[in-house]
Length: 89
Image 1 (cartoon, rainbow, N blue to C red):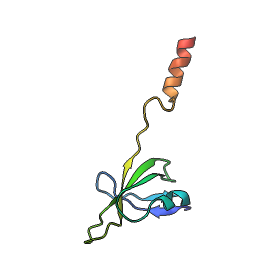
Image 2: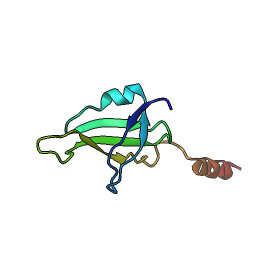
Image 3: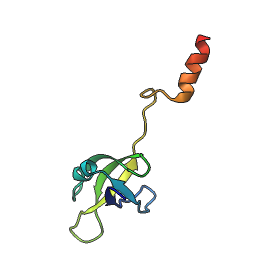
């Protein structure tokens, strides 16, 4: 499989198995704080990455992710496009 292996902690507390592009992998580095938004190559889902303490005293090397939600109205959905076409008829 192409891509860099990434195993962050999900909001549920479980570990995710993701593959990242080289560009996304370079965005994330060890340490706390917001890292940015990455895309899982397997699923195409986007995730916001932040740092997390791993449990070892003084170490901040782990990562946690939260799904990036689409904002309403940003991209037209197929259902919304179909509704506007039906109104025009």
